[in-house]
Image (cartoon, rainbow, N blue to C red; front, side):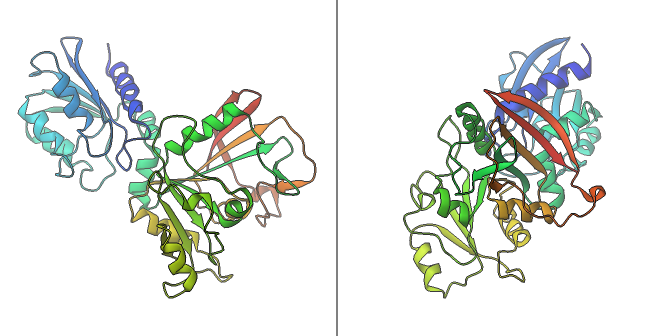
Length: 361
């Protein structure tokens, strides 16, 4: 077996942590000795043991002289858990094969250097593209200090997300709704505009499968949200943050804060709306590494216009509405060569719907 084979197995292990490790990356590890896998593990959730430690603890025989395969450089600093490099050195592992270097400045190449200084052979860059793709959220967050933003919406074949009267439940199939809830569970926060809350009154929780509830973020520049809104309920299950331009002295601010929601004052644009770039910076400072945006049109359009989104997931239902509300408004694009360019990563079928998963380039 070659190094790429074992790295693929490490990646498969890493995926088991999806939706639970944030803001940490998904990491899997294998220990191989004499051509046999003698230990394996993955990072199960933030705050728990790292993958390397779990693999070492699960080993069924002495690991001295073995090879460790891990999709991300082992950490060398004290965080919520001790440094993995210390345990690797202590257990006399002789070779470490790494998928990609850690983007965390506390680790970046330092883990590799420390292992090599202690006589351990290190090979890095094995299936590097696949390893970076798995943790694209983590790498974006570390390298830009801003959250990774996914735009998601369901539309008809003719590009409508609602009828002209605003009705949108349900454009997509029940199976697609389950997919959306899975997507929610994989993000730290879910964001909508106040018009979506006033029109649809969504709960914005994970209900159709098991998974963690993301932070609910409502962009509400003038605090128009109603006290009976579902996002202001069940805050023992899911927290809610209201992003506004209002100050703490505003009576509406105090009233909503009394409901248990966290009200965050953001910088205002020239039009008096929440500056989304400022909001994202503030969310990143609260360890929010990923945001799923579920509308509406104004928010989607603004993010695309300002190049603040990295991923676009569109659920296309085999329906035609004609007149209705469009998913994306005017981007002020007047020439075809200025069109937003998408890189399609995956196209799949969900019941009768088609799901297109893209990256914005």
